[in-house]
Length: 297
Length: 318
Image (tube, rainbow over all chains, first blue to last red; front, top):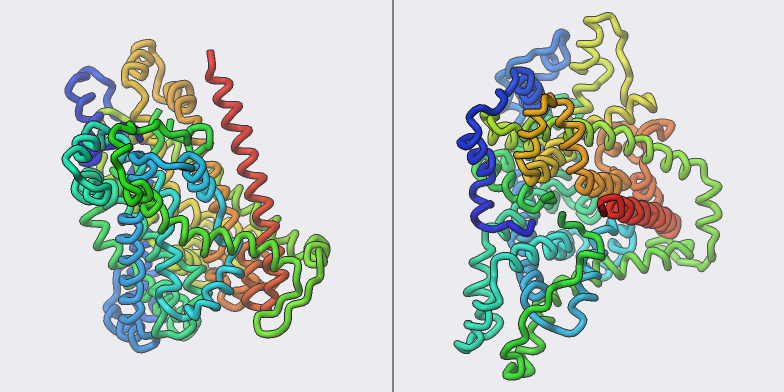
């Protein structure tokens, strides 16, 4: 993580390339390496394909044996049924609002806190950072009952801010942004800016944040994905169908699963589609970001 | 290696040059940067955690009264067969999901680390697709594939003469099904973590081994595995903390009895038991007591991790 910077972020495969050019006589990749990797790719993608198959066939086809392995023509019928059974469009919108706010919020708040821990001097800094690190190891799920009581006393039950506000605190994100900031912002630049009369706030927004924007972007993406897919907490605090996120809407569809087998599957597929579309564009950066934030050596 | 262990968390002190000229406003500024996190964490993290211990001492009904009953909830909990059943299920599902996941990730990371591999980006991206798929969608599609009557898997098993297996209604079947979902979701992510760690190992070591006639398997065993030790410990810890929180899968695979995951609670995990007692039966006190039990388990795991990682660090010293 110490060598994490814009350079490694944009060229995750760089070591591979370097090795390829300097080591022409290296051993060949065996066929079974590809066979095993393709098997893994198949295992990763098949369930999504199967989701699509069942989401496009009527119940009679979906339950026939041998199973149909090609998409049927029932997709729009089932999709229509999804939208009429639950306010699905609304739930997708709710998910976008919640995940978007959490993604952006985490990127900004974690960059700010990471900046303070990496570059500012203040009393109690080491102790407070230790607290941040320790909070990463405590699963919040075990205290859902008091969490619900607090949200309830704030009058936030069945609102989206009950999901957004608690989701903004991300200890891992602070840890991650601190790493990025301590490696990419030098003390000399900080001093130079101070001598020129810049305030801490100006240094953060004009110098620090632009430097670590790639890292903050990936952090925001991970926050978005996690929030989009969250289930337990929304399941507890959301009560009315208009407030449902996409995941809770899927659960509501599943309750009518016995009527039409493809219905819950169609909902699942439609709720996964936005993330798949996002992944096509930013998947490469997510992979690089996860590997960047990982352990090295 | 970058660990999250406290030992490494001490920070290099940045230069204090120019600080005498800073006004009060600027000297207080650092706290403003960390305040949002600590405020939110205090209200939605720390206070609920401490409050869990408090509520656990009461017979607490959300709309009615709450009566102080001391440690009665815990006495009842330890005598409750459903609690031990949930502990057993949680540990069983955790073992069934963690061990295969880490083994598969080790092998795949080793394969992906090949210097002359083509399509490397495609392989890496594909393996992250399960991670972006929601647990809810995953549970629904896997429950369908493993269905007794219409499932793809039972149809395939039928072709080779194995009778239909009722995965969801049997204990081992439901545990295996949940484990498969967890493995599917996380093995690609873990593979990327391992791969990143492997790429930090100098290529020259592999080349030297290759020259000395060590094949792929021997390189895997004697170079890859030892250099991955720290990250393996990390993934064991994270998958344990994740494993203790498994909730959505058991809730969604058993449609008729979601809160207990089956008629005989064959796949009810601790978190699902907590949810059932707290939000199904509205016994907040008893639910909080289950939360405390979960906390004790987490602390035990964290302590084990600490002992394990200090042992590894001690072994590394010459």
